[in-house]
Amino acid sequence: MASLGQIIFWSIISIIIILAGAIALIIGFGISGKHSITVTTFTSAGNIGEDGILSCTFEPDIKLNDIVIQWLKEGVMGLVHEFKEGKDDLSDQNEMFRGRTAVFADQVIVGNASLKLKSVQLTDAGTYQCYIITSKGKGNANLEYKTGAFSVPVVNVDNNASAESLRCEAPRWFPQPTVVWTSQADRAANFSQASNTSFELNSENVTMKVVSMLYNVTVNNTYSCMIENSIAKATGDIKVTDSEIKRRSHLELLVSKASLCVPSFLVISWVLLPLSIYLMLK
Image (cartoon, rainbow, N blue to C red):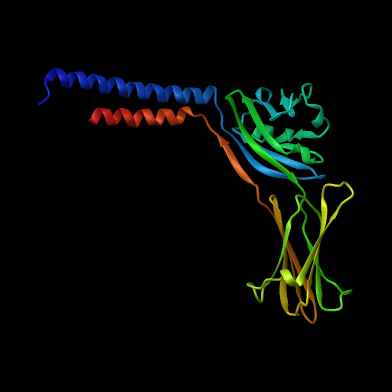
């Protein structure tokens, strides 16, 4: 049986540990209110030659003049974009982004720090950081931005062929995709021997036009032409009957995912408290 002195000693130690855990928790929440905010980004892809969005959100702050948004890119000197005191400040913007960036100024106050990137270029790919300062604190999160080309295919009956054939055409893809034909009537069918695909380089010498032919098709059946690379997957469907032709298409980006940056002290605080309780009960 433990002596009275030992019981008192361990009781004091347990109280100290509990108090330390509680203090750490209080400090943690204090830091949360003053020095750390949650920032969320979404990995996405840009279509070369078109406008793109680098998505970023943060905890809203009604004090617009206290909000600072900085976009940075790994390996690039200067800033991609900066917004502060209610307006853009592009004095330290890297030349490669000059005239190509904008934030949604009317949405900043509700926590939208997303960046519009005009006329996406292949070299825009890389790791970006969305860095936020508000009256509540500061925070940041990274996102991976991929660039390429993708477009919806259109499938038509090729009336120039000697036999019933389908022509699947998409104007812009990069990197070079794969093309697979499928049939609703026979999902296990392999059309690699009955199809032919070609890639034609476009005038800017980066993207390519995709043309794929499927031969010896039958009526009253739905055929699908699926084009896919590391960034996107697009499908064009066609059904030919004796009286009509039905088409539909679908495009899906394959790189979208969220990245969340939250203060690490919350984890530390919640670990300390259960540990102190465990020691007290030993």
